[in-house]
Length: 153
Image 1: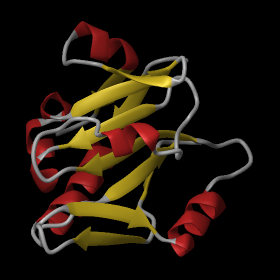
Image 2: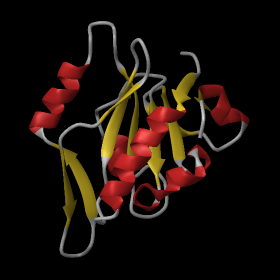
Image 3: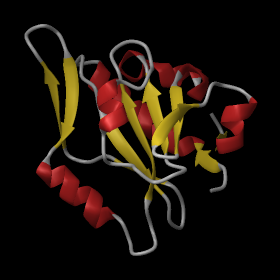
Image 4: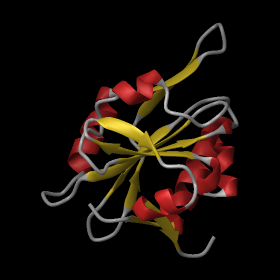
């Protein structure tokens, strides 16, 4: 798989969505699909905050159908992007999430309910799937080999 060139406009759209969720203390999730151009797809989802302050997000059945209908015959989801309330890392739940299982898939975790995108992808956890597992791509040459951002900030 080649380097994923992520347009800044996709990150800007994601930042707006995740910060909006974050202002209510909620996580969010979205997918990035390929095609004629990369596109952010935000499915219907249910954000949960339990009595202990634990948060999670679940794509509803309707959202799952939206994701399926969003893809044309020659398109696929190349990345998942979601927020965490604190630090950016891949949780055990993230590791088990079956939404992206192909080699080369990218997972982006935005810290602090989406505020991390204000500091670019360098503030986010970015992982790449290979050999059936997720591998951390720390900022720098190793990350740039697999994902870069193009366009105005």
